[in-house]
Amino acid sequence: MSNLTDLLPAGAGGKQVSFVASGTIGNGVTVALKADGTVTAVASVSQATGSPVVFEAASIDNIATSFDSSSNKVIVVYRDVGNSNYGTAIIGTVSGTSISFGSAVVFNSGATNDNSVTFDSSNNKIVIAYRNGGNANYGTAIVGTVSGTSISFGSESVFNAVYSAHVAATFDFNSNKVVIVYQDSGNSDYGTAVVGTVSGTSISFGSEFVFKSSNSKEMTIVFDSNSNKIVISFKDDGNSSYGTSVVGTVSGNTISFGSAVIFNSGATNDISSAFDSSENKIVVAYQNGSNANKGTAIVGTVSGTSISFGTAVIFAAIRADDTSVVFDSNANKIVIAYQDGGNSKYGTVAVGTVSGTSVSFESPVVFEAAESAFIASTFDSTSNKVFIAYRDVGNSNYGTSIVFQNASANNTSFIGISDAAISDTASGSVTIKGGISTNVTGLTANSTYYVQTDGSLSTTASDVLAGKALSSTSINLDYTT
Image (cartoon, rainbow, N blue to C red):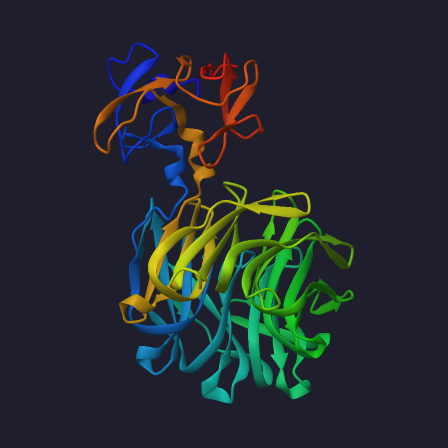
């Protein structure tokens, strides 16, 4: 921030500077500088900052998303109910807080269910895994190549020639393999995994490996880059529908597993998982049927071929459906998108911070004030935004998307504290860094304060230093401290 003066309005000479407000700013609150030269309250950026964008003007479901870090594009995969339930994909480009789309491309001209999509970064290819209703519901995969705002596909490859449900896929960065998990109806509905190798525009598979010899559903899979393991979480219908996880090790075209570990001793649904690369932890989000279907999250630590869990934490106090969790590596936050059954089934986001073996959550934020279903999300590491796709029940079940930006991705733009309340679009004074703000409350003299993701000042260390308190109401915003 040593070049802060380069960002200030022309003629700014003192430590109190007049800015135009973007949104109403309260008295004595932290403010951040926006790219257009206006200021906003730091707390206000912890919300879905973009407007909803329709990517399919027809009813859709079975949505999955991924991010192609080679082309810097997001990929949305879905079943197009308006087009004979065909499997369809579309490419999106995030710019600021908006997103634009290319044309939709059909990858399977048949009923397509249980979609999952992952990005193979060693080959720069998209891999979609699904249950092909046009071919006896066989487990099937296809390789896609993104070019500009479009995607082209190779030929379909069958990985399980029987009914295959609850399909999920991820990319193992250590072995450079795609791992697909599914419920194998040809083998007593056992939880099963297969390793895929991408070559050009095709994918080939090794043998099948059972990870759980019981009826397994609601699968999610994620790669732990700290331990170089994959972690599968699922509902074990062979054990009272308990939430269960297992660690897998990929070697060539084979995969071996440790022992299954229960993370929720109750009926478990809508399971999603992500890897927090800052804390090197797995976070599993789910609907807890043994606790009024509340949205719940738990932190897992992989050690060797096993995983242990901390204490479960509630992120939605009433029913949560269609959970989708991703890790925002820019803000070092867990972001859970879900349908809030306690608020008219609105599309909602809960932002969490992992610490040790637990996770704490900020207040939920609505991203769509209408019933939202089949929610899927991914993190765009180029724009540092979370992309969320969903079926907008309030708009004819159209395929819709929105861009979400975390507060902590913006609080590094903190420039000072407002000297008085400022109305939206009005001008007002801000004490900038290097000055002394005298209208803050609740401070402890001689304590060092930091800006938190919700805009508050706290002695808890964060990436953004505010300054040192001189009294209970004044703080020296010395940004050279």
